[in-house]
Amino acid sequence: MTEFVAHLESIYGPTAEQQSARYRAGLERFREAYGPGPVHIFRAPGRVNLIGEHTDYNHGYVLPVALDRDALLLARPRPDGQVRLKNVEGKFSPGTFSVSATIPSAPIGDWSNYARGPAQELTRLLGKPVPGFDGLVSAAPPYGVPRGAGVSSSSALTVAMAVAFAHFAGWDWQGAEMARLCSDAEWYVGTRGGIMDQFIALLAERGHALFLDCRPDAQGDFLSRPIPLPAGYRLLVMDSGVRHTNTRNEFNQRVAACRAGVALLRRVYPAITHLRDVEDEPWGGLEALLPEVASVAELKGEGVALGDLPNVPDDAPLRVRACCRHVWSENHRVLATISALDRGDIVRVGQLLDEAHQSAGTDYCISTPELDTLAAAARQVNGVAGARLTGAGWGGCVISLVPEGEVAEFTAYVGRVYTVQTGQEATIFPCQAGPGAGLVGLAEV
Ligand code: GLA
Image 1 (cartoon, rainbow, N blue to C red):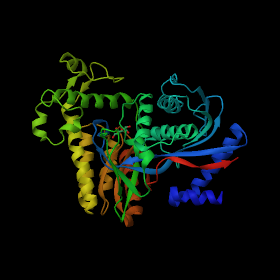
Image 2 (cartoon, rainbow, N blue to C red; image 1 turned 90 degrees about the horizontal axis):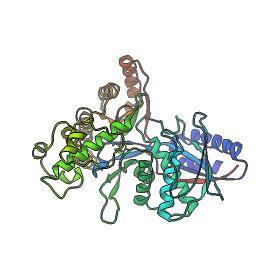
Image 3 (spheres, rainbow, N blue to C red; image 1 turned 45 degrees about the vertical axis):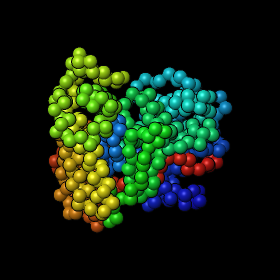
Image 4 (cartoon, helix red, strand yellow; image 1 turned 45 degrees about the horizontal axis):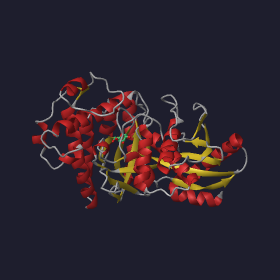
């Protein structure tokens, strides 16, 4: 185990010791559940997004950072094509399914869907069933990824499963193809998200954010570039404790508003396929072509097709103009943030993060009073460079760049203000910018 701990240090840095206790406990549980023998250990991290929210499914730009909090999957291959799953958290009941190219989904909310999706997608891609396995998942906070907090716990689980299936199938995956596969696997669960979460979970580099252009090139590859986090600052994550409810519908309605925008703009710009394509047009000209609000039924009546989008009722009022404005302006902000980071202009980075929070709240309507309270409190602390909600929204976390010397003061102050103003507790922790998913090692239990 000593050797193992040294390896864990290269993944987790200062929390390696605590992580090794978690690994040990997981291995012990695995032996109890499935008996002695070899065990493969896979992991995939959660993420925060520095800037670039709801741009990925519009083929725009994002700048996510992996957390050192992850989903662990302990697994031992089986010869019979069965997947048996257990979870260290008793509230998640065990699941079993057989691998094939068409795996029936379990009811919505059943966590085994995060394994069924990748098993089905990888089986289709490889043209033969991937091997099954006995698996045990360990993803409980504090060292696992907080759930429902907008830090991609579901993508972490999907990616950990996909990496395990790929390993047992002997598939030497490449970033873009694997990210797309995992993204398709999540469509299996029902959310029409983009590719950001899977990409960062797979390709993160320690100490870096990842600039990603979500528009695939002709070969289906994506342009990406690791961006070092600013020296002298810590990226702090403030979890509001407010959890998303029913966000699949809200999320898909935002996707619908963007698609409606594209369909309407195409009347003047026939070649466009995504909002990204009008990035260089002045907003004033675009705005005039978009209705403030339109229902799905009205749009259909005008011949606007929105494609396959579950849970978007016909009478849902889509705020087409404001949603498109957010995406258009957010893409500009991501590029401006990259240049500000490149030239070390942290004050400008902070302004852009603040503007992104404002746009997410007023235009995309995904903030909450709790997230606004956290962001406002964070900005009060000396030298802080911006604060914004991160992830899909409707609860979850706010991030902020905090001067290293102010971290203790920041944590105490923001925590206190949040409790006084909302009566709730925030969990505030530094993001260690961990590496991407993979096989951690092989152990004998
Ligand atoms: C969710 C989705 C991502 C992205 C974000 C918002 O996390 O899974 O693809 O759209 O929301 O930026």
